[in-house]
Every structure is written in structure tokens, then in C-alpha cells.
Picture 1 (tube, rainbow, N blue to C red):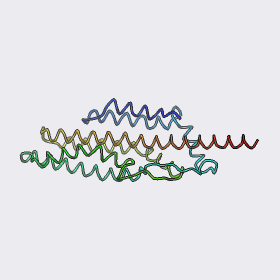
Picture 2 (picture 1 turned 30 degrees about the vertical axis):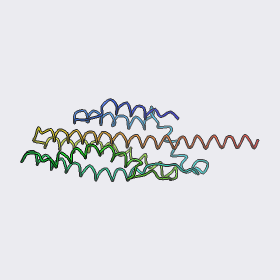
Picture 3 (picture 1 turned 120 degrees about the vertical axis):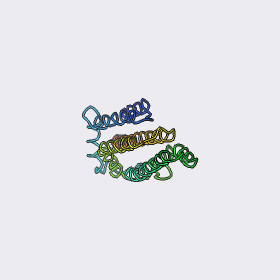
Picture 4 (picture 1 turned 60 degrees about the vertical axis):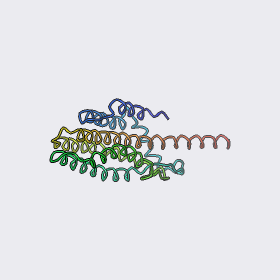
Length: 221
């Protein structure tokens, strides 16, 4: 099955790779546009409707697939992002009230290096490995995408409030803002991609099952 929307999503990511709030806003707006398009008549609406009809059909639902539990991913990242906001607020306080300490410089460097590794770890990595589940359970991942648009708005609004509270032109503050923009950008891309991949994997499983049924019928005849 052609993964058309994965290609479109990746094109958006590669066009922006946000490092500042203005670029992040444009990137997130592009994600907000592709999500309803994915579910629309011009997108995958017929396939999604067919998927929900088949998940309870014994002909198709006997196979399991490996997926990432995106509810766990969301929970872990929400806590992580809260910690990141607190860290940046503390850093801003340090650089506006006293000379920036080497400790914060080092912590920020480590945080920037580890952020992409952390995000990788919650999408099938050490912190949230893929699990084998039924097709019906895997289909629940699509609900994450349905509810993701308001979460995108929350990400941007919280990040913007944080940006407006920054009172320093310190390179540390600039680097911290770049880090949070890159993190939100990377996370948003990956969670949308994982939902779409779940859908395509389920549909591929249906196609495999249909091929097996046709082959068995041919043999019997």
C-alpha cells in the first residue's frame, strides 16, 4: 500500500526543521492541515472506514501486529516537556540575575544532545518499546491523531508564552529556545507519522488476509 501521507508529512518536516518560534508556528500549522486531509474524502477516509468495519471481522482480525502504544508516548512526553519548560525558566532567571554559570551551559548542551535520543526512545525505543497487539487494539492509535490538533495548539501557545517571558539576549536563552522548538517539531512529526504507519500496517495486514482467503478458495475449487 502506498504511504502517500507519510511522504507528504516528511516533506513538511524537511521544509521546516524548526529552530525558532515563527518557523515552528508554520510547521505546526502545516501539520494541523494534513491531519484533517488524511481523514477526508480526498485522503484515506474510505480506507479508514473499511478498517473499522473489518477490525471485528474474524476473517481479518486473527493477526497481530507490532505497534508503539502512543498513549504511553504522549504521557511520557508531556512530563518531559513540562520539565523542559521549567529548566528553561530557571535558566532565564540565572542569566538575568547573575552571570550564566558553567553548570547551566553544560546542562543545556547535554539536554540538546539527548533530546532527539529521548524522542527516539519513546517511539519504539527503550522507554516505550513496540508491543504485539490485536488489530483492533492497534486501531486505537488513530484516536491519538483525531485529538492531536488541540494538543498542537497547546504546544505552540505554551512555547510562545515561554518565549515572551524570556528577558535576556543571552546565547544560552537563544539555544534553549532552539532546543524546545526542535523538540516539539520532532515529537509532533513522529507521533503523526506513527499513527499513519499504524493505519498503513493494518491495511497491509488486511490485504495479506484477503490474498490468503482468495488462494484457499482457489485451491478448494
